[in-house]
Image: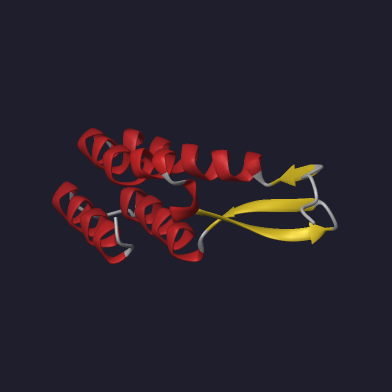
Length: 105
């Protein structure tokens, strides 16, 4: 028997994290990396959300959405690469590309 989902939480946190990563890239003028992130992460996720999203069942018919652990780690690393003081643009770009490759995107 499949229970209907009555409560689905975590969407706000997912959106906020994604927005903060994109904002960090934009704030450091890494516009090409925003495009790469869009093409390698967002577009595939639209076709198959299970590639980036997971959930925890928190009640009989309640679920909490979350990023898969590797995706969450990649987002945190990309944001860190974009905002780490003292890094050159080349260092930022290289680290972001490395993170996307390691995460399988």
